[in-house]
Length: 248
Image (cartoon, rainbow, N blue to C red; front, side, top):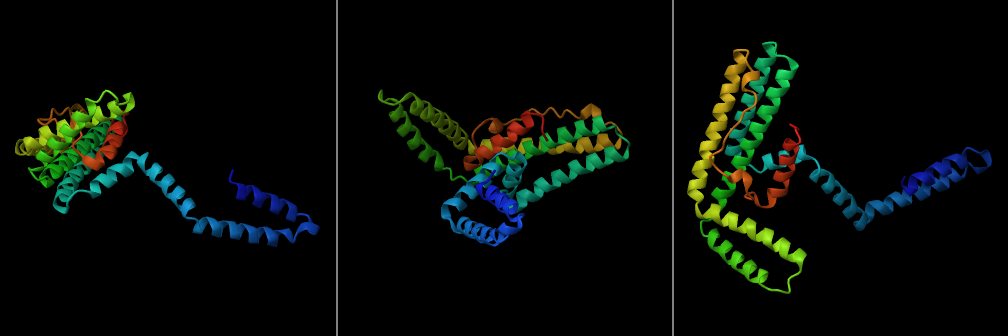
């Protein structure tokens, strides 16, 4: 329990005795001074901001919303159109009297498709923003880290960290070097997911939501299995873990 709350409780208890009642005024003044000190303390504000950031990083849904906010306006409209179809499929299935188990299975399947769709949109947006010459810059980084890894004096922990960085850079180089092909693959996968959702709407209208609720989609691109999301990678991994655990 915070110290100021313990102090406040003690002051209230003492003030209950008539002779000690003036302590309420003194205690109130001290509490106000303490709160003013916290409000004006840069160190305390940094601690509060850090706690808030930590809480946000542990909230996969909040991370998903942040990823959504990174989409360009036209791309966001495309995502919203798919999300609207998913909601429509659920509404139709509900109106047709689908059982709660079937509805939940359908809801989970559509949520996973929506997440795959968002990841593909983010990956394509990242690739489209990259200058083809970025591959040359990655080449230099790969050479530098490779040279560092050849040093025998490197600690095990640092070697492990740099090896992982090298793996990521090599994969990014591979994707960027075949940028046009990867974008074509992503576009094909986006169309595949849109077709899956359209089929889910049609199945719901026919009263057959359950048979097609697993939504097993084999993607043409390996983008979703790579570190293609730059600074957004931790957020992507956080949402991925949520779906791996069965959340939606």
